[in-house]
Length: 365
Image 1 (tube, rainbow, N blue to C red):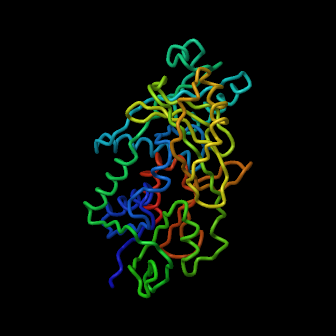
Image 2: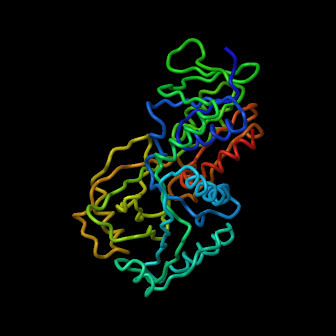
Image 3: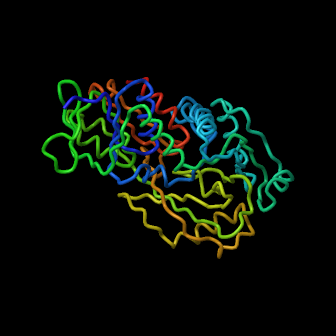
């Protein structure tokens, strides 16, 4: 079996974007996915937001790759006809003691190269979104929404147009080392399913587990991962909002915010529930907490309109009460395995940053 140039484990938005970037450079690429379809994990269980890049510490990978990725993503959507819209976003202070948090956001955004935020006073908030309650707000015009399914399909189509392949229903059980790269075993096979010179672990929630199967990878280089489950409730009937609406962030997430889909329907979420394993079940007892949080900025909410939607899980490298950790793009200097890149903790803004993350991985390789 002749080795291919590169194998990517994980056919979410990150894995497909990396595969596309390498295929565009003329490499022979195969993306391996354990599920029967692409993008069934984090890529399809999120808010579907194109982030501007204002929350993340200056100089971090999240800040740099979000800002660059957002610009690349808007251009990509326009070129490929992917459903998206620049809705804009209001970030709200619902009390005077939250205004300094908005001031911090503004300063951080400007340091990150996001130069289009502006202050919105209560009278203008009432004009823009009459149902909102706020003492002050920031408007982010470059925030938007995207059809993540169309995005995934476009990345796969680009990859395959360059000769790349996506192999579904292929659960990686072991990765051996060979003289010129890696031998990848799937299911209970005795012989390797494929050999490659370069390996990218983009398995998302399962990236640490995949890393633990790689021969010669020292276990101390595999970071501890924390799982944060978030619920989303949909709002029955017509949405009262035309823009995304965010309160100030909370520990572990950006707070229970309002997002829209391309049909204009509203949903609220996510909350943060720390979990020990991947569990997408929906906890209906969260309704009361959601109602209280939403009414801080949307007092007229009729909680009977809140309908259980779905849950998503974020793979984090920081736990409860800890400062948010950065993306981790771990290459040979970090783990001493030639040709291997491990991607850990690629949570929000991973959807926005995917094309930039892919360029970063290609550059590292």
